[in-house]
Picture 1 (cartoon, rainbow, N blue to C red):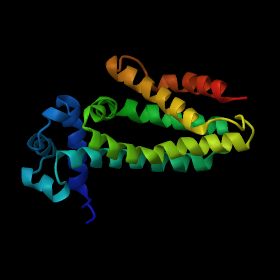
Picture 2: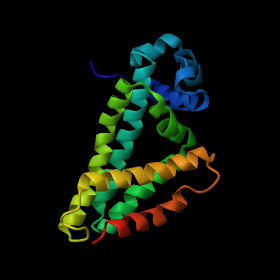
Picture 3: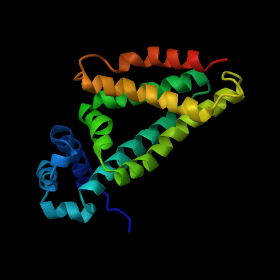
Picture 4: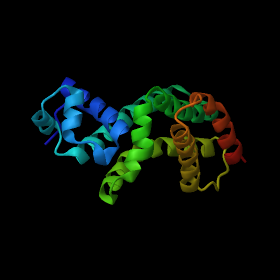
Length: 194
């Protein structure tokens, strides 16, 4: 059965981000999410099976939108260097614009059980595929070496971006996250080039 969508679904997703960021996943009761969304507790169950389903749906929704927007921007660009910069810029600016979402993605999703983390990893595949596509293009264009291990390169890129965001979250977003996009891109490109 397909999930219901619509204004209430979006309200619940946005409320879940706020409640989970403020209280942590384990202390975020469905009733708190419903109250924040301005819906009855029972309404939540018209859209989601349980709190775990809310968390997964939240991540699918936010990551899905991000991947779609990123893919559109990447398709408009021909330069590999700019494509890498776009990926990094979009990742950092999206989370800088929504500190609560950054808390959820960087801290709360990682404290969940193994089954939940496995489902989250499935959602991440679309984003990792974008990184892979830039690496493949870079290899084909001769920017990156032919023998580049794409799996390791992808892990390095994702890991570096992820660590920069986590550090920003842990430091209570006291500095500009998006200002780190250019130096991060330069560092990664210099490390990957021939």
